Structure formats: structure tokens, C-alpha cells
Image 1: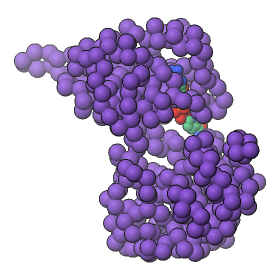
Image 2 (image 1 turned 90 degrees about the vertical axis):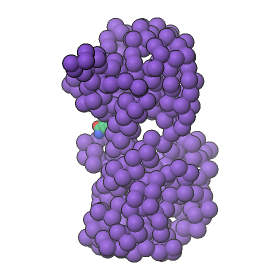
Image 3 (image 1 turned 30 degrees about the horizontal axis):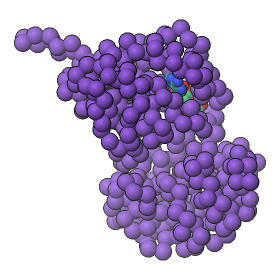
Length: 371
Ligand code: NAD
């Protein structure tokens, strides 16, 4: 049975769904692996490396494939060329891809969405949201350190003492905790805030100070946050203002599943930051945690440079692809029986991540949205 690795077509995408190092994991399961030419180029993996690892490289990789793996969903033109019964594994943001989901359904494609893999212990090794957030969080701290024209660590020298940078992180999920850990390793003094009660302990375990605003916590389901009321949001902004005004670098990573990113910081709050300060908004693409941030751009608000994230994992394509590929290989392994791709729809991971199968939309909220 053939697994095809698609070349990404999304503008600016540098990642690839399978790295040469992991080709052997799929061939050992009994698959043949065929890679589209140049698929790994953005992540610095040459076609020859795939061949040396046991894959074939071909323009016709998708023809005859039982499964096509990619980072972003295939574009509609390519979906319509897939024979019924073909499976796809990729990120598939269903809320923003209803037309594509309808195409996948109508073409009889079995489509799995990496972001729908249930966040249960057994599925941790397949959790691509976490692996890519890890990359994003690290990158946010490095970007903040790079934009800030001063030291992160304390420096005590014969020429005098330079105090460490003050960093504030808002949102302490997977990305935020990684941003905290990275800023701490660089020597900054870090304070962080999250609406979930459990996050306070996690922030402290990273060696940062957990900001306590004495507001009600907002736990949702599955370990995620709940949306704030406008009253609470306003109160949170008021209480955070002095922390942000005192920060040299502010990093925001807050998100609520299925919603626009919460707006946590107004332009007026940023205007109170000192000359030379830096804001990094990881959520810029999904609405922004910071008023006025723009994805893929650095804008000036008051005295601060405000950097807006745009496909941040693609800025570190090597490790992001390696981690994503391992998540995909683990999911494919779960769906393999007797050397063939045979997903067991009784399995909660298979069922949870399936969007379309057999001409039907299996993901209930998406099915309802399409009616
Ligand atoms: P996410 O990307 O949806 O959100 C990022 C963070 O923003 C979250 O910590 C959230 O609480 C926070 N946030 C939301 N609104 C906020 C606001 N108004 N102000 C400040 N912060 C706000 O979440 P994520 O990072 O993907 O995951 C969050 C948590 O889910 C993890 O820390 C973990 O506890 C849990 N999780 C569990 C598993 C598992 O069990 N396998 C896997 C991954 C994550």
C-alpha cells in the first residue's frame, strides 16, 4: 500500500509531513512511501535523502496512494483528483474549511484532521497541536529577545551591573509555558498570567512568577479555557495594565478553542510601555491578543515594536516537521493492521479525528454547520 507525501502549496509553508529520518518507520509497517519532488526542500530535506531512506520520489506520488499525508489540507483541485476511498491526514481547520470538507465528502475521501485528535493520554504522541505550539512558544521568546535591543540576563561586570529584562507572558498553555521556559533560560525575569487555575502551578514550576489578579478562574472542558464575559475582560485588562507597563517584553499566546483569540491588551495599554519595549503576539492570525497587531508584520504602537505571528511553526521548519512527522507516523501506526491502512472507527482517536468517511461528514459540529 502506498503512502504519498504531498508538497505543500500554501504560501509561506516550509514544513513537510514526513522527514527522511522517519520513512523507515512506515516502510517497516509494510507501506511504500512516495514523495512529491521538492516536498522537503523548505525544511532542508533533499529528494536524495528520501530516496536514501527507502522512499521513491515522483511527480505522480498521489496516483494510486491509499493515504496522502500533508501539513496543510490538499487544495480543492487536488482533492477532486483523488479516487473515492483515498485517505488524507493533515491539519484541517474545519471551521474555516467548510467548502473543502464538502469536497472531501463528495469525493468519498476519508479525511483525518490532526487538530481533532482527542487530547487524551493515549494520544499524546499524536498531538500535533502541542508539538507545533512547543515550536511557536520557543520562537516567540527568541523573537522577543531578538527585537529587544538589550540583554535578557542580569550582567554584573567591572563596567557596572545591567539588570535583567522583565518579560510578561499572557496565556500559559503549551506555547506560553515554552515561551516562559525559553525566556527564563535566557535569564529574563518572567511573570505570567492565565485564566485557568491549574496554570498558576505550571507557571511557578517553570521558575516564573504567576500573576494573581484575584479574578474568578475560567476552566472549560478538556483542560482548556472558557471565554470571558466583557465585564471580566475589562477588569482583567485594568489589573494587567501596570504589569504590562513595567515589562520590557510582552508575549501573548492566549486562545479559546473554536473562538477568536481573546483581546487581552488594548493599544492604550501598549502605549504605556517604555521606549524600546517589544510585544510578540502569537495569536495575531486568529484575531490577536493585542489590539493593532498584524500577522506577519512588525508595527509600532506608542514606543513599542509589536510583532504579529503568522504560521510561526513554519519559521523553524526542521524541528517543526520532525515533530509533526512523528505525530503523523504514530497516528498512521494506530490505523495500520496487517501491513495495510485499516482505521478502526470504534477507536476514540480514529473516530475523534475523522472529518469525512464514506461520503458522509463524520464530525458532528461540521456536519451541522454544512446543513
Ligand atoms: P490553547 O492554545 O487553546 O490556549 C492557550 C492558553 O491561553 C491556555 O492556557 C488558556 O487557558 C489561555 N487563555 C485563554 N483565555 C485567556 C485569557 N483571557 N487570559 C489569559 N489566558 C487565556 O491551549 P493549549 O496550550 O493547546 O492547551 C491548554 C491546556 O490544555 C494545557 O496547558 C493542558 O493543560 C491541556 N492539554 C492537555 C493535553 C493532554 O491531556 N493530552 C494536551 C495538550 C494540552
